[in-house]
Image (cartoon, rainbow, N blue to C red; front, side, top):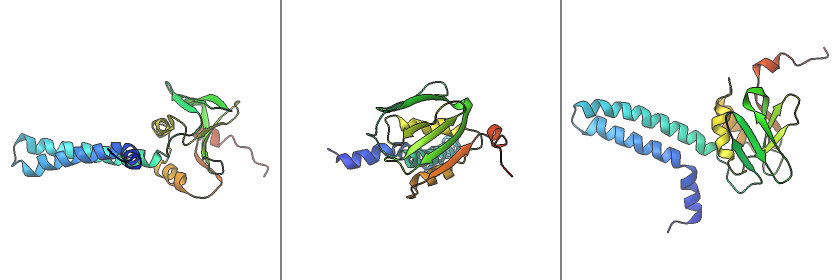
Length: 174
């Protein structure tokens, strides 16, 4: 009934659409019900809808597609990637750095943990959209910077986040 391309975009923006619906309901209650308790509840629903809309837009920008190699699994702050050629597990609490490598096809997240080889996760891997919530919990991460770097057409590696505990341990020659 719906074209596959349109269905894919609707699925990508589903959280933002739900937030817009909640916001519309809140606006209706706040301004078109004629006062009373529902009027005041409408303002609260508007705020909730606005928060859902903003979060939904960020999530939609994070989703890069699907059908890439491998599967991402997240379980209790532990990220696992199981790919056809590589794979591994990284604990978010022990993560030293998060980078994006746009030179690979498709672009990859690079998760660095001390004492382990870097874990490369394609942005299009199955379940990769759930990484947004995990990355958002990293202390001091700038979500807008991460989303902006995902869209850049350059073909380089960019550090998105580095652990504050590890920043001062970098040794310099001079």
